[in-house]
Length: 378
Image (cartoon, rainbow, N blue to C red):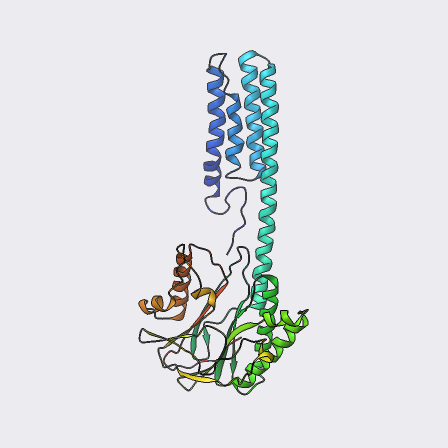
């Protein structure tokens, strides 16, 4: 949850926090006023009063800065009146200068607040788009325990070109994870295109091959509508892995369309699931022969399956070293998917110094011991 910055903290303890924040600039005004009044005639400390509204700008908003600025101007008037009985030309210039500089600081604070409000609105729209396009996965889908995390490379975005979704189909769970070529709004549009096709097609096709063909047709058709030239069409594609996990069989059926291979974790041993029939990315079917034959892999009780996008394995640290996903997973002992994705997220951000060069999405799932379940999903 993101909090909007205000002039002063709100909620429990805000009264004490308000006085704590104001103590330093107001104390500075009092100290400068008293010392200037008691100082010799040739000493003038009044110009130091500008520090009070300047310091307030670091801890509050425009109205708080204006309030402190008014107090500082009043203090300058008091200094001039007490020391000479009237305002000299020097004090008049100091008052005018203090007023003008305070006005400039207030103006900058107002612009900062307006920018923060715009960022807050942008985050709200982005979060709403994420909930609509990239729906959160439930913690349990059929018999599977599931967790997911999405990290956007854009500083103010919550969603980009990476995608994932799941659907319940009878006695099986179907999943997709993908990565759109490119970034920005066009990538979000393409991701939405594929997610919509998957959510509809997962319930229409009896087998995984038919689903993959349907996704290829939908993506190719959708991308062609926004492509001006044939050369550009060859540059637009989406890598994706489409999986089906039966409830009653300890296996995974998968078709991989140019996506990084998922990882199976069995008794702390990590195995990449490389398909014997790798397919071209979605959107390029007309340029290469495709069979969309599914490969089958084991997924026993207690096994983890980790799906991810290339933003994870291509993340670099400051020395250019790629993130060692296999080694990290092997060294961790985790009991549930949620713990796994949280640890992976924190470790990935620590590896990259807190920022990613590309979007990253991760799904972790586990086949627990048999138990009663309801057919849930998205």
